Length: 73
Image (cartoon, rainbow, N blue to C red; front, side):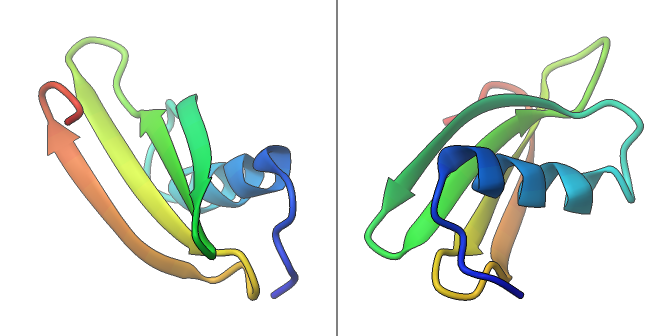
């Protein structure tokens, strides 16, 4: 893994991971909090379904992800 320094890199890491499991992946937002990137993505054409992916900035490793069926909180 490599250091994730930009919002574009963080978004691409999240998209690459989610494309393994979902055919539709659309980035909604990305931000850095402390040493972690948080990327929110839409994963459904028809109904509200979102994923929040947390990525370690120093390593580029996925720390956590959560699927939400309905509004993203």
